[in-house]
Length: 338
Length: 182
Image (cartoon, rainbow over all chains, first blue to last red; front, side):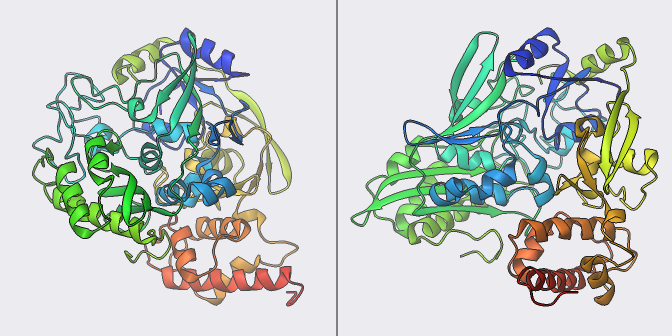
């Protein structure tokens, strides 16, 4: 790890002032990804601004019937929070599918959004990587790319976003509250993370002077028919090859509303409104689910080692929709797939 | 994030050497004052500054769990924690679990169940298990396996580790119910 200086932010305005004054500084909260990246010399901030003393650690009900989650709420506290367990079990399940208990005790809600890809070329400073060194090339295209993206890729980058929590937040239509020099603004979750395009070094639409202060959940939590199905190389403590978050509203034998988001397949949690519109009004049958999977994967493209992900995603989507429709969500302790 | 890492590195090298900070860590019940660089991890502070070498450095990247300690009662990874950020915190390490010459029930259970071979991961396993029992989320062997997944044992003593934790968990429940007082 290189030398850096350390400061504490005293309030949100102070944090914004400090980050705006030094473009080589970074905020630190849980540190579970940033310190690792610093040890690997992938992140080399001149200064860390400790935001853990800011009053952003509450989970509160908001006026529209939804929930506001402070950016510093630890992942474990959020996963087991009574409001999450009762009203947003999809989010709790997704959080518990990720990392380990120790890391979940450390990692913050805001930091989870800003964690970086685990593409091994991004981590390996001896290899070209457009995300780490723009313009240097992508080693994963034509390299070892078993874990890489099949949707929304570009000629410059085929990295995936590693979060499980974010897949559920995408499905739940969460909002990201941020504060910068220009004041506060709200970013729809689908607009928060970017596709790589020709600027894979930029993961999100958060501006350099902005801090995430909270995540808001709309009132609808799909607590009756949901699942988070994560498929990975070992049963615990591994990143997703493919994960599927589903929330369904079923009435009179038909799907009234569907939410479907995939992890492990793209540079951001992958949602497809066309597929959700196709599901709405259809009967919750295997045929409906197969057609949904076909539509979602219509433009999927493999890069060699990850070709299997297209069929894995197809089967994962059908299985997850089936689990949600039956009201038998995937357990994150008993790993048998329901 | 938008800053190329090499440019950031050059900017950092040009800046003056950052100041060390005086902090107090309450380790195993004793206040310990020390002066650390911003980049000193809690793991290195414990091992190199406080000579508490029970906590082990395994991967140093948050993947193996060997460095698990309790901070303010919660299990965390000390290799990905900056000591300067834990000024004033209560830290419990493997050295702080035994009381009055008696082993902690988890330490005794690990011996009783032969829950290790080389022993390198054991302090992290035991601190993690202490955190798991305090959290109260594990009720079955499946739960223990899942909630201990952040602790890797390269000797593969997992089945005995699960048995030891189950044993200590049952003892803890009995103690809380006012039954078996050991």
